[in-house]
Length: 115
Image 1 (cartoon, one colour):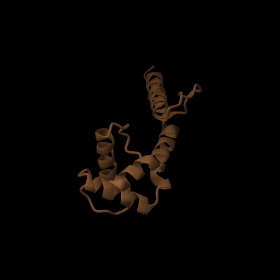
Image 2: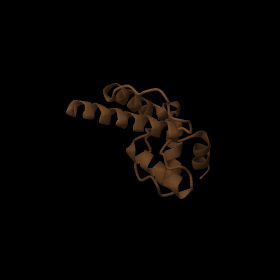
Image 3: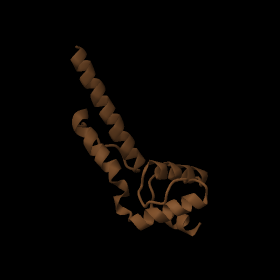
Image 4: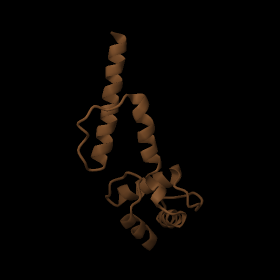
């Protein structure tokens, strides 16, 4: 009985994560059953970790410079999308009434570069 309950809880957790990711991307959650938690977690982690890979080091540097000029970023200008850069980006997005998700798109990059 306890094993069935744990399996159910793990399945619910995976479905919640999948629904949250789908809703954050503006689409409906998948209607098919999700894979067990052990299989779904690496895929979700990989997707989150590769989100910023489309940005070049120079683009991230430009964003860091814009965030630093606005007082949001206090770190070194490295061109690496690290935790400090992501947190600064979230604060800047929130202050500018944008979704504070820490993901940098082309429009936001242009605004940061112009500041």
